[in-house]
Image 1 (tube, rainbow, N blue to C red):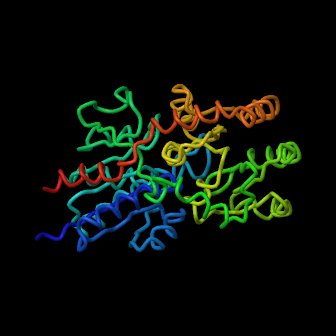
Image 2: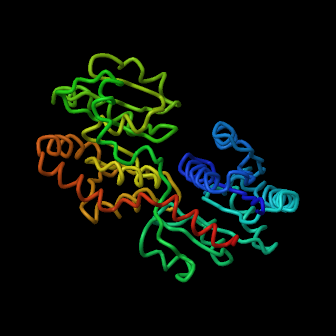
Image 3: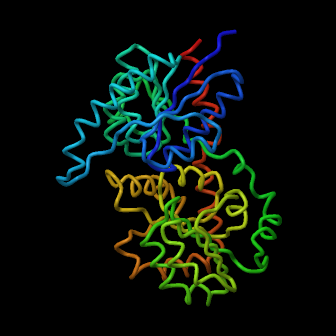
Length: 362
């Protein structure tokens, strides 16, 4: 049997890296002797996270365009040419059967080069509003795996497959882990647990909000697991104490989701997909600082189907305490949000994406 070779590229944030790793793991389970190589941006978090997952990675000297005139922008053409040249060298040496891009800066030059060399390419688009890189790459890609409906205005319809986003398989059926999770985090089983998620790096505005509202939240007889992000841990660890656990990063996401009763979260694509599978009442606070405001669009896709609540950062001071307290008191509303968000889950995403990749090598 032929030994298959796959190159995967995605990075910059956990939202691009973890789907790429999930896809690689699924392909590896089907083809145990296949070879895998990741390509990332040389100074981004993928350079640590991918080797931790057991895969080799090569870095490109690439970064995105800034919105204002900077030295970085003046260097962009040089970096792009360097990355295209290096991508060509990597592909010619490794000779992949398929190249898979999950978004992020490095996937641009890599997939562009694969397309020009006639190697099949697959794009996995996590967001409800695609970034520039994937829009440009879609014209030549063989298959585009999407997580949301109605993306025909961005991508060629005949290439699109609705698969959903790859998520951790240990999140499926977390109900059975609740008692174990409550014990693991030393929580009081008689109190409601609020889980606050700011993404892998943390979210300054959400942290400021929780700091300001902490007294009010605790007054509702609620306990909190507050993932503040590694950038902010030193500022907020002083709040650790009775009914408050401040952490930089959460290793056991399945347990923390199982223990939670209400969740406050950013609306990155991976988080949204996970929260659909988890099926708990969610208040989304999208980051307004991401390209094309895609977090707001991701959250709205769920809110429009009555699966979650949304508060814009600019409205937090006036709306948060009212929305949070009303949700906490209304068990019926909690149940309705849970049921509706679960309807939007696509738990077989990783398998389906791998199926599409396999079609291109057979």
